[in-house]
Image (cartoon, rainbow, N blue to C red; front, side, top):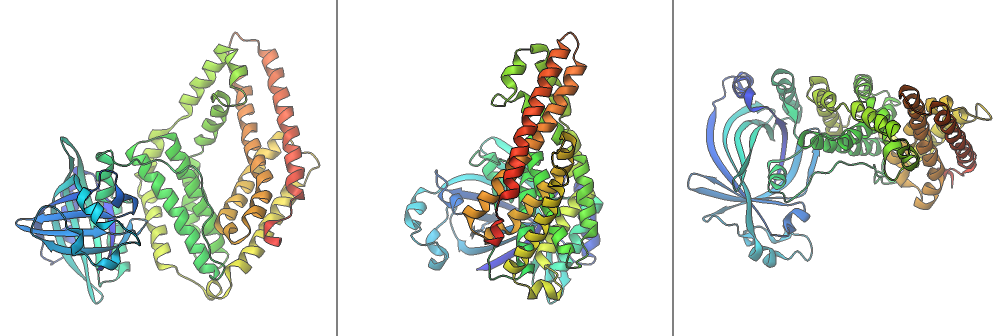
Length: 496
């Protein structure tokens, strides 16, 4: 068994010559070798290996063949880490019995899977390879160019890999930065196998649309807990970034936005321990500025959604409804986000946050303070700020609620980071009215946009519709006041 640790970057095929030149420059006097490789990937028709997060291939180089199985691993900011097992074979079909018995999970149906293995796809590519001295070992710099093939379909394959073979991971990160800034390389979160499964239509890549509580351990120190939360947030972001690259959609942008916000919340906690993450936070705030159109889109979607509270009433005035739909279409700025995702600062932030998760720099306090002790105090302090913000006035107006949304959203995301440490029922009972308020505040934005649409649409009964909109807003504010009182009465779950 070997533990594969490599940084994977994707590049445009048009950058081929620039990539080769940069590789040679970085490798200095190291000799380049060129290999012609074909990898054939196998699984059962019902994808039993894929379900176990395993990838099985046979690599052919001339007359030589080697079978490899890669087991579940991690991908953070382009750094791929997976255990893999290899065995020399003499045929074009794999033999699972050649691997060690102890690599398989309990009750793994080895022989049933062996009988059912079929070829799913292959990758044909030229590999350019250099070995760069690093520490007590080397970093293998690889540039692969070719294609992924499924029957008569194909997609280009053009990527850089920096595999740490006894060398220093920090050297690999330095080299990778050069590719991002010099040849516009992108952080690669999908392996060749993952892209092959997509091309073969054996898997789908759906955006994450709802965060989950990070599975924290009460026995951990605060540093371990915060870096685990940052890793989760980064994986959430990079998954949705991959979705955007494969199939651009508003849902992917929403997932990217949530991932960036969650990363920002964790970094703000790390900053409390005097870690220098100011530049990262500033970059994330700049990105969120480019994603601000999403709140307008969501508000308009609240008005037009078939299952929404306003759809039926608005459909009775077709001209107004059509105008809102048109405004919703104009609100979408996918091209802006796609261009943002290709920028160096965006890619470097993804990449450097992955490096931060890998290195996990810590001051003494991060190692000494128990996570649950810190989480209890931090949630108490944060909640106190929320309470003060939501009790400044006996009755909050619509614009006041809108100003409070970012603070409430950040507080709930902090709960995702450390709330797992506490009783689930108590946690959900406490969070429910606050989440209701967050949904209600977003609905205020929808009604605000409705008012603008009514005023901007000609030849409609403007006064009657404005009156109706005001009634809807008053009703919503009344419901929000009830939620606010209920939320403020809840016993905090970290105190129980």
